[in-house]
Length: 223
Image 1 (spheres, rainbow, N blue to C red):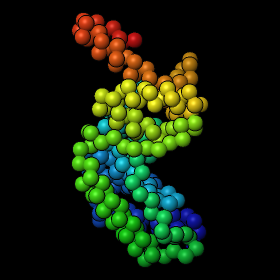
Image 2: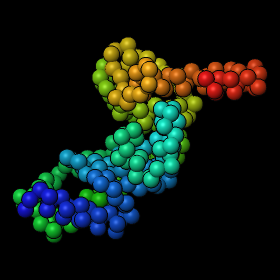
Image 3: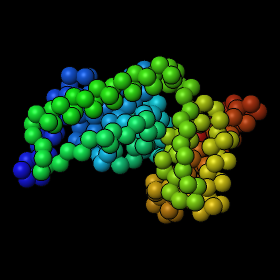
Image 4: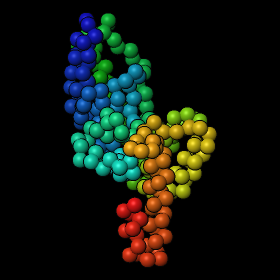
């Protein structure tokens, strides 16, 4: 069996199992929206299940000045170039299937079992964290390197009014030489952490101005 033939059979078997269990499929991901969370199953090596609050990408796109992404299909939250990695819930690496020893029956059995396990993991997570608005993911990163995986935690901190913690983390990472892989800026190159720092600074200034003079806050919004 060629790799192309295997990929076709594998995708079809995964799609069939996903449909039966309530998961949607797009390219290499399956996804579900449940109780304010976006669950994403990635067919990688090994496959894995991730989760993030549904608001996380929309808040990030506002901060990164890409609000148009919010009108794109929901699957963009799973495979978009500027979508956030979720917190990793589980890896499914105890079964190795490749083009040399697979069959339609084996693939069907594998995906039925694996996605059923992912569904149980999803349900257990919801039982343990029923409030997506208050959930703060724990993300371990090497602060001297690329810390993009921590972005979903930073969005949760900001969403919950804990901007100071997000700013403290970013400043500590930058001091150690770490950073974020998301970059933008026409005249000056800025990474995602720079955008978050600017966002938090403006939010703090808006809060101060609103307390002093609510009519002045629009001046900061338009900067």
